Image (cartoon, rainbow, N blue to C red; front, side, top):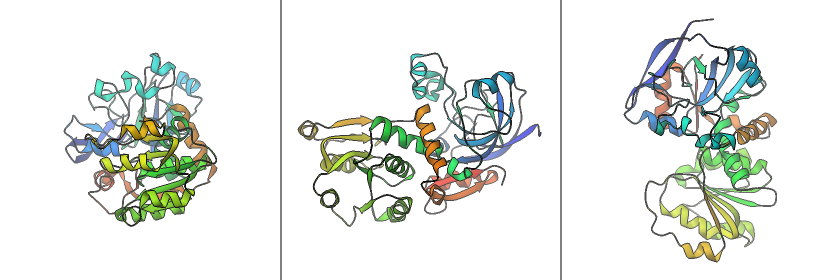
Length: 363
């Protein structure tokens, strides 16, 4: 096995360069993963655009176990050659958040509190290989791994973490199930992931977007969504009334980057007793919020972020079922040497119409 790994390092604002790293010797509770594909996430783009210390980005990682210590193999139930989906979290395993399964809340894996996390850890934290835009990744003793069959298409496997957010927000937080109507505002990668999770749970799903999102709305139909609404051309409330025969919507999710509009319209289309889920930062105050409407309709409003171990398992089960043609979401796939182009495209500054953008380090 090669002792050297090439990696794309984010060195400055909107800049990456390919560097080589020596693979570390591993202990009994560690491992090395050979990266096969990495999905480019909005978080990667955010890091790429800001000033920071150099680091290897990328955390939607799928790869094969290259080396693994004896204790790690027993703990993870894995062997060399097994394929895994990685979570980004490197939790402590001991705090109250870890012990209740909310790994994302563990302070040890929060980069804002100097925690370590895949795709967000500076190079000066040994052994540096903490990001997926590399040929190999170091497997920390507290890494969280999920085995996935090699029969699953690699592109579809790379969608596991976005889809796990969908299952977390729709099925675990939103209690979505059969005979419910779900409306998704925003047909981006996360909106479509939530739409697929809701469909897999048996719900009727509506996805909305604007003229600028028509390609994504058309893709949503190909993925199996029941209805699409172009709110640039159609009245949202009237169209929802028509689709639901006046019953309106049981669960509404807003994952748009817009301001007040999608939030207030979520109140408008919600049925009595509905749940409204907010999954995207607005970075602004919303003065038009009508709290009386929340009381009148006895609505539940939730903010959501991230996934749990269970929702990743749900996503892998869904992908492995082959129920949805997830591969058609892959708009761009780049070799490692073009990671900079992949980040630009995913951020809307490169090739047109990005959705599921991936990097394949061995292309």
